[in-house]
Image (tube, rainbow, N blue to C red; front, top):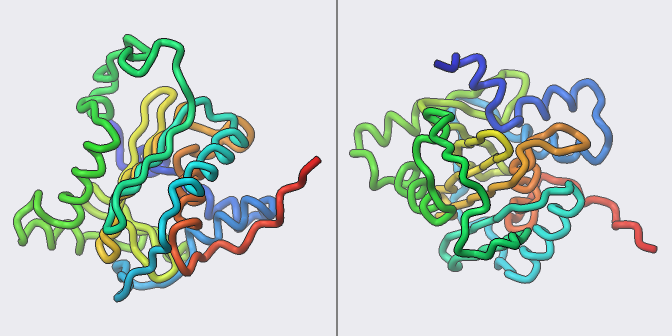
Amino acid sequence: MTSNTTRRSRRMGIARWCSRATVGAAAAVALLVTASCGGGSGATPTTATTSALKPIDQAALQALVDTTMADRMIPGGLVLLRGPQGEYVAAYGTTELGAETAPTDVNHTFAFGTGGVISTANDLATFFKAYVGGGLLDPEYQALLINSLQLEHADKPGQYYGYGLSALRWAENSIEFHGGETAGFNLFAGYDRTNQLAIVVWTNPTLGIDDGMANANQMMLKVLDQIYTPSPLAPLPPRETG
């Protein structure tokens, strides 16, 4: 059985971003760190009272996914957003075997709890809406789940942890989530109750080649920056061309 300490050290890499920022990370990384870890204090995350979502542009989302995956040398991945504006999917990578053929014979149940259930991105979006937003648990246990979220580190506001659930603050918004991974695979799946948005990001491989950070988390931050207003991320400098 994996200990709580081990699970926390693996979980999504957000706490690791915070610690790297305090010792002087590179400027581009520090922008991501500050956004994910900043904002608010107290025992439980709060939610915004009005929608903070920009109109989601399918072409812009796909372009963002293409650029980020290519920059991080990620051969395959997918982003799914499902909310009041509809469902948006941006996939990256192909397989020569075709869409109907599994690219591997590996049965991930070898990873016990981590691979005990094989799900699609649509499955996860449906599950997290019910798990976080209500419909899976009765009202008593739903309240217990949400109210269990506590600030994880007093010196790193913005990251919360509770009973089988984490939460992060994004400006004045809160996203409850959990991650998952096995060898070569990394996932972020969550739900914003206030804005009724399910977010699923998966990438292959797990960690970035250059920085060792969780690829799904890095992709997730880029997506949140594009679809939320306001975003706590400072604008990045324009990309060099030529």
